[in-house]
Image 1 (tube, rainbow, N blue to C red):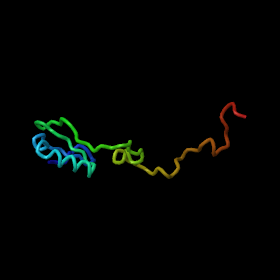
Image 2 (image 1 turned 120 degrees about the horizontal axis):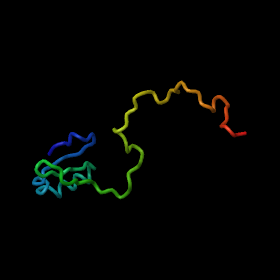
Image 3 (image 1 turned 90 degrees about the vertical axis):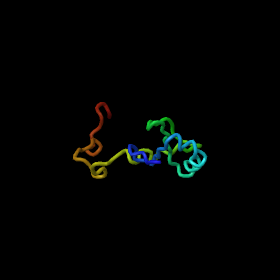
Image 4 (image 1 turned 90 degrees about the horizontal axis):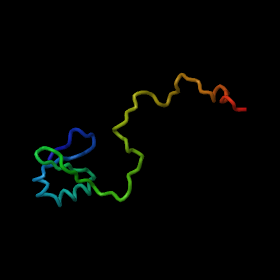
Amino acid sequence: MATHDDNPTDVRTIKASEFKTKCLKLMDEVADSGVEIVITKNDRPVSRLVPYRDEEPSMFGRDRGKIRILDDIIEPIDVQWDAETGKTWEGED
């Protein structure tokens, strides 16, 4: 069994022949650990064994590892906002 290198999250791959002999044990492992298993035939993915979830996962942390912050997002930029100048929108009283 190997770790899938293309995905930053934990995904294991296993040959279908090995899955066939260990399927009940692997089902328990997936349920306990939450790590999915990709099942391959002739080195090609054919199916996935994923843990069952009753509810939709939270939105918080969903994109963890997918989004990178490249600069300071706290420090203000060198642009003055209309709210700071006291200006109003055109047509407002």
